[in-house]
Image 1 (tube, rainbow, N blue to C red):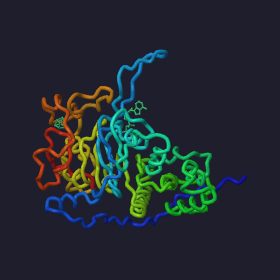
Image 2: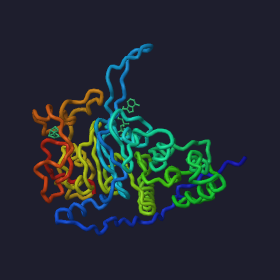
Image 3: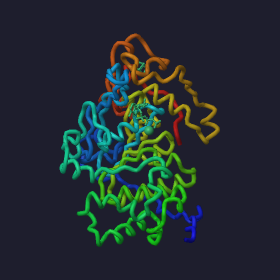
Image 4: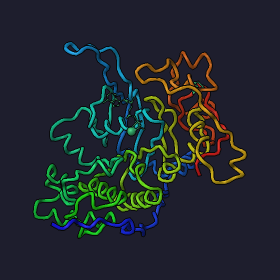
Length: 386
Ligand SMILES: Nc1ncnc2c1ncn2[C@@H]1O[C@H](COP(=O)(O)OP(=O)(O)OP(=O)(O)O)[C@@H](O)[C@H]1O
Ligand code: SF4
Ligand SMILES: [Mg+2]
């Protein structure tokens, strides 16, 4: 049998439509203050599609071979709350090991929560099972990080994209599957004729398009993207991000976008949550987080982002964090960031700072008035990601 042709990188579609992002709607507001809030958070309107409340995931640490005894727990996610609104992208950033992927797996029900709730349109999905869970899961799909390992090399692209229809045949009955898969290939910018090809015949960017097509197969409302472009070349990253933005507009999708790269997260996100050691340190609109961060951890992360403007580069202050990230099996008391924070005081070791709008900013018309889990939250002049 002839070896199937490998597609050249040049086959990558390069003409993704420029995202037509204009999510600000005319919203009737009662006061000027509210108007500022609405403009700051254009996607925050209506009911959230997802509400996460005090979500916890502890992985037990055991000892012994025959009689396993629990000796502790890795507190991967330790009481996280946030909302996701229809049509918005919530970016989640944080250092390696802070619990981002565990949050994604909990939202997908791939891991069972130790405690807490995940409401999808008002229904707590952590308590669902059987048919009710299956129905909800159809609406929440995932795109994985590594397009090289997340696609089964022995399956054709048609089988990979059409596999979700085995679980939900009501979405595409058997006789209609081929047509539907070809439609999905077309939607993600791939030639529908490629339906019988195998993953190894595609480049990295094209494989991620296949992953996205599979994620779209069941017409979900929410897509959880765990580092979806981290394994791709920079030029291909932009194409995949543009595709995701176009699809979001077309299908009114809500994204949770997990990534290390702060510049990419800013580009795609309406709001951003910053995680540290299993907790949310700060959350707000992209402008609030990048231009007016109030949590020392966010400020340190942003101070390390490369800045293209030489003037800005000369004037910025680089905050170098000392010490290692503590073990999530034994996190520091009080504020988890205190062992690396240059502002830490006694109070930080005694009291856990709550994620809330700091008292001093409450009712004040300033972008600093957003949720930050720091006893001494204040703005710092950090030149962030462009
Ligand atoms: N199944 C598991 N059993 C035990 N510990 C786990 C398990 N899965 C994750 N962890 C631990 O939980 C913590 C959070 O892991 P997670 O993969 O969620 O981090 P992350 O923020 O996604 O990191 P990265 O940026 O490297 O992908 C880590 O300390 C990790 O070792
Ligand atoms: S609560 Fe204290 S230790 Fe934690 S970030 Fe704020 S100042 Fe730093
Ligand atoms: Mg991860």
